[in-house]
Image (cartoon, rainbow, N blue to C red; front, top):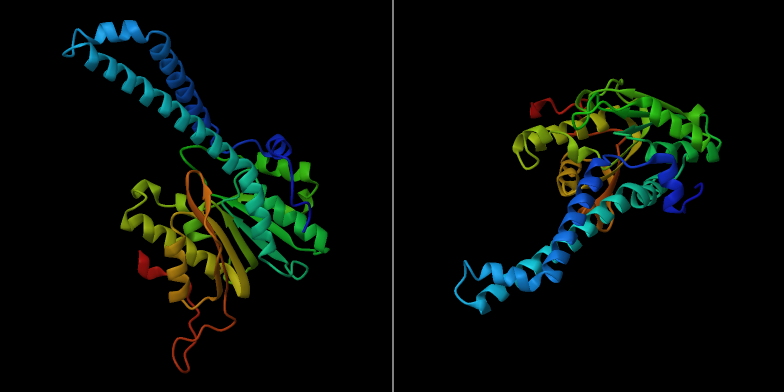
Length: 297
């Protein structure tokens, strides 16, 4: 499997950071709280004197000033950690988990069509393409992004540029589409992969709402629909993986496997892999062919 270890500077130079506003927001607030905590430290006595006008006695004023300064310093540390964890998760960890996702598929030489659902800037997309190239496969991988994500239009040109930098542009195509109604025919892909995308579907309804859960299940149903019988799906996602596992068991997917817990973006994440059965038996002589989960509407 291609080069599995890279320095974070190499990854960042090619892919940058998805949603860079978040770590910048955290970093700015961390710096602000750091400055406030230093002001409490250097101007502790004047602060105590000022607080004595509102609190009963100097002891209460000193406690209030010390407590506020400590909380401010602790907040700065937490914000710095959150910013660092976000940056690590979107760069180094994303690369490492992409290699693990690729390694979940044992035979890439027979893969003709692969899909990366929610490809973003292409870390997983290009990992798949690199593996296709290494295995000598004539296959191609499609990267699909939603038409709009988090109120911003995703630019496929930038994703294709990263494929060019990785030397796999001939293996990659990108397009926009609705993940809840994938613009592909039934049983089209041999492999479908996705990295930290599925949990974002339905967020407009509230991440813990029944409507959001139904939207996520609809996308999972689309993943199953477009998979070839015997095809492999591999999803790395946050928080909601137990829901996916339950649903995959309900619809009788095969070889369902869940990785150990990995902390990403300050929450738990797992990789879940499965295989679509070559025949899906419902009763003694009935074969189910409809994977669209229309009953979730």
